[in-house]
Image 1 (cartoon, rainbow, N blue to C red):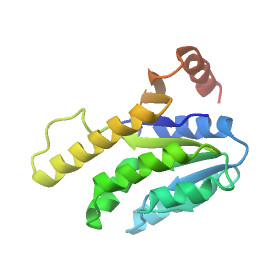
Image 2: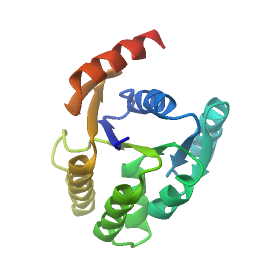
Image 3: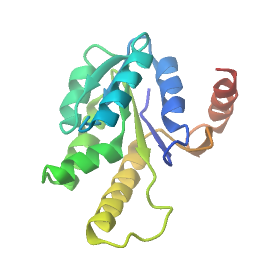
Image 4: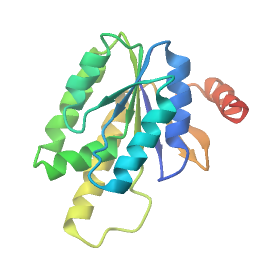
Length: 185
């Protein structure tokens, strides 16, 4: 029961794919959301997403203390979907937290979490142009570094484009079956 990293661009279908993975990974899935509803549009979006997931996932909201939330969730859930790492990194930067230290803690937590499969969703931000300001470049660099380190310890990693998962790491036959199931869902 290894952990999974799911990367993709905005609106690529990565969260839907990760949700299907989580539903197949366990009977008691949790949805660990890192978003903060700071404006009316985001509050509506969060409320809508919660309502859509309510029948399947227990929702846990934690914008900063991701490692502690995973540890706590693993006590009662056998699959934990984290959505998303790039929002978490943004939250850490805004809170003046040390992102590298937080990623170290996350890696240690993932290594220690054996009772639940953790599926981590994140935006791949390194495919566009070089950002024109220092803060955006710092964010891109921190996210890219975190993705590399997390992918290294995950058993499976996917990149989702247009709703289609591509295997970066893991079992190709398993991914082909999942891809067929994505279209059946």
